[in-house]
Image (cartoon, rainbow, N blue to C red; front, top):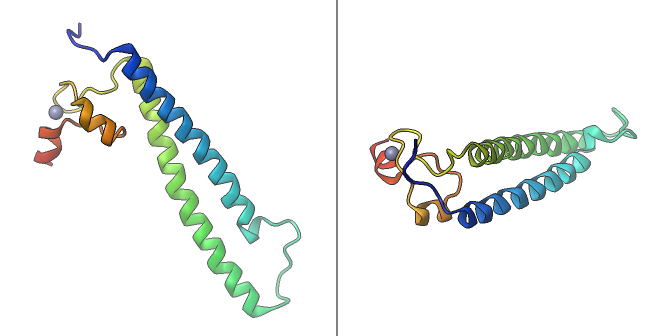
Length: 119
Ligand SMILES: [Zn+2]
């Protein structure tokens, strides 16, 4: 049994922050997918080589950006899961409570400051 836990209102704020981040990410992913010329159903091949090369670059940028956002989305989902399970805010390594100041500056962190420094 844990003898310490985060106050419910602190967790509520953190959860609200993650849910908002999740929504922002969803919107940005939609925008990126919409801006990717390779996803354009009217996209035609081979009409203009210069334009195709430009589209290739745009496509690669969109894919790279989307991958970064997808990774962040996973981190948020994992954090929300930890909040649900009641393990959020406890160091993954030593199980101690992570300092709330540290959490508020980096809500994604999994480790307490002393474990993070050992890394
Ligand atoms: Zn630790």
